[in-house]
Image (cartoon, rainbow, N blue to C red):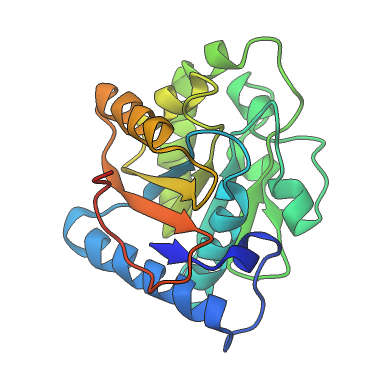
Length: 222
């Protein structure tokens, strides 16, 4: 998949823009892949920070919602969250509250201006997020989310930065890796792919940000 550079700056609200068309192509590929394999929970990550994974998550959710899908975004980038900023919602309670048993999923849901998109923000920063991610409550949360929504998109930390992403990858139906033209080094992209393969993640494809070519969804063959 390839997206234009400006698409990572803000969420796209224009149904008829070139950027929207590109996300629609990505969405169509995901829906086609999901038709046979029922990919419902999809993790979006990147090798390192600054490659546009969070805004990619938001824009992909918007494209799915505009195609009559109910979408839940979960911000699992607990130490460096940004989904609440993108959608301009508060981050007082969220994922961490669910994982420590304080709240149920339904109590942390935030509605957005896009009617079919719900958001679970990251919540308060814990002392040890990796321990939380190994909680059975995380699996229960994902199962419940898939009962309520057509797609669950999980924004996680860069896979080479924190182990949280590797734990989450093993629980999700599929993983998308976001890299950035002119920023992501080939060696880091390969290392990220290797890290995901080692935890038996189902790597659906790669999104290449910042290059003016036609968008495609393919297996990562860097």
